[in-house]
Amino acid sequence: MTLPDTADGEVDPQVLRADLAVGVSAFFTTRAGGVSAPPRDGLNLGAGVGDDPRAVATNRARVAAVLGAPVTWSRPVHGRDVARIGPDGRAVGAVGGDALAVDALVTTAPGRGVAALAADCVPVLLAAVVGEGDARAGRPLAVAAVHSGRRGLLAGVLPAAVEALRAAAGETSATAPSGVELRAVVGPAICGRCYEVPQEMRGEVGAVEPAAVATTSWGTPALDLPAGVLAQLGRAGVMATSVGVCTHEDERFYSYRRDGVTGRFAGVVATRRGGMPGGAATGG
Image 1 (cartoon, rainbow, N blue to C red):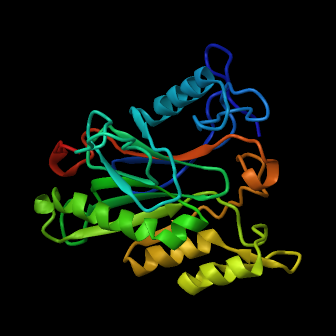
Image 2 (image 1 turned 60 degrees about the horizontal axis):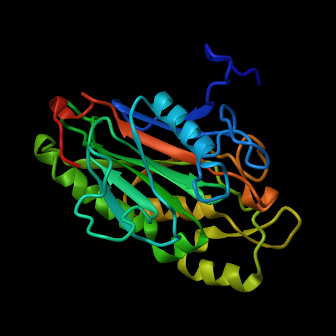
Image 3 (image 1 turned 90 degrees about the vertical axis):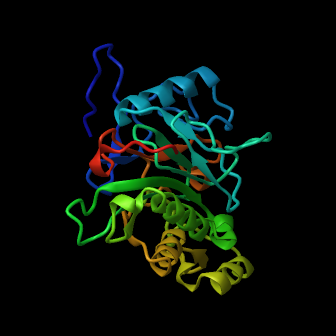
């Protein structure tokens, strides 16, 4: 693939665009277009993986430029907590502690991006939009970025994020009498052909989410996290699609299972200013 150069000779970040809704910018980053050195070479966006903080800051600034909005970055902890992000990029109502040490971020603030980091786990981007039957059907009310790995699948981070997204959208849905529709795009993640796990672990996850049970291409127990995520989203009433890319197989993406010491890519989403119904601005 030929990568375009910026005016200063650097390579632009290369991203996979996600079509969520009119007025929403959403994409998944690749390794291309960053300044991090090996073994995290490229567009590493993870601040906790041993990279030079200056490189991470530069990479994050480049992603914000592609998005056209400042971005709030969570610090995944493989749990189910959700933070509501306001226009200033801070967690709404947070008092003490690390309010961004969560696996899901939700915002109703136009022009404020939220991101979920990954390197085999599943990044999921969601949007709550005005429902059918309204002249503004499909216009965004709120967006979310979620990190869901094996432990997040067990903990129920996706149902928690969907509940928080519905609540956030409900606060602005007075402009949407026909109700709220939820949409999601499941990003690049390790697939069931590659994610080998012990039989006991597969059984534990399968007891919670049967759709995640899989077998590797060489015939051993495995987990299909994207399939499990899609199943959970479906039960939650979310219309979801998947990009269908395996991070272990596709070297455009960071993969912990493949590389060990490596960086993190991200799913990033924002409602563009003026993208809310009637151009409304909301608090967070």
